[in-house]
Length: 408
Ligand SMILES: Nc1nc2c(ncn2[C@@H]2O[C@H](COP(=O)(O)OP(=O)(O)OP(=O)(O)O)[C@@H](O)[C@H]2O)c(=O)[nH]1
Image 1 (cartoon, rainbow, N blue to C red):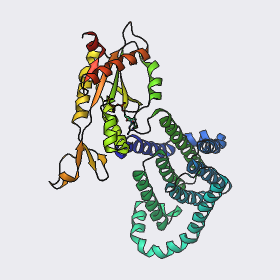
Image 2 (image 1 turned 135 degrees about the vertical axis):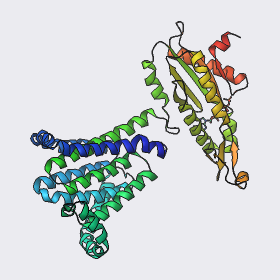
Image 3 (image 1 turned 90 degrees about the horizontal axis):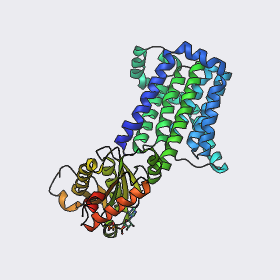
Image 4 (image 1 turned 90 degrees about the vertical axis):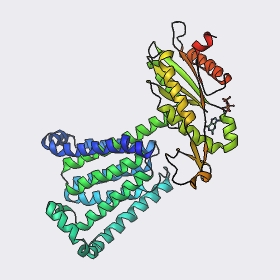
């Protein structure tokens, strides 16, 4: 998923949800506290479930953070006032885990990861006082700002710790921007939630935060698994499996369009398979933006299927023609090592022109619709394939439907 889309569709909604959740914790304090107090086991159980699911899906970083968050709960149940220190350790561990890949579940990786986290915690313990003492004179400005905001802000955390938190949150956000994955977003949000525990160690607050962390991890794991099963890995659009799941939901009226990139073998042979892959991605992104209520799927190879529920061939043909023309007009720029790119809106200088080679691809479309005589989806697809073959025969880069074939 491109970064911009990821920010709009994932990072922003999840962050807003977490802000609303934190707000609710305080707004509904008596209700939530009363609700959670007879079920003190619930946050522990939720973290155990999230950790177990994370282990079984090979998500070691999330499994670790579930276990470490469980540790905060155990510390809090023994000595509530140590919970904010425990949260700080987990926060720093999360910052570290954000920058390292999942290592897989094996005894050696487990020992290695525990050692890494133990070293981080020991270093933090040893350095926090020394660094704080050294840096405090330089941080008086920040001290004044925090003091003027709310003097109680400085009762739980020192000025140095605020600076550390701000730096690690900024580094975490950078990591999310560089590699926008669900795992990175939820680890970063875990850090944000842990800051709440550092500032407020009431038992019900810790419990609610633990529930939120568990829910986030389960969301990330389940969403990624869904995407793995139903999204095409190369293009990111829904896959053939998603199409087969979608078909039974279609009513009595719909149109199936099959689309195929023209002369793609020649394209691959000329520019290489990697460039071919990138071009498929760009074509898929255009098909995915089809108008007229269509939904695009990658059927396989360079073939795509578009379904238009509740539409007739006459309804969808103008939309497919616009789509075909958009793809044909789309200048794909090969730059550097023949890597395709979006077409530049404007050339900055004439000198750019010779170094940037522009290529175009076209697509042919075959269209069929469900009728009283043609009700089975696979038969409709076969008809769309026949129409696609006709489009290829007619010179490619055109839309042909079963109606065109019949009227011949
Ligand atoms: N780069 C890349 N190529 C693929 C992928 N899937 C299929 N292809 C290639 O797509 C080409 C399809 O070629 P053909 O089915 O012979 O048809 P064509 O060259 O597109 O010609 P027409 O369909 O007749 O216009 C083959 O060379 C496949 O290797 C893919 O995921 N990536």
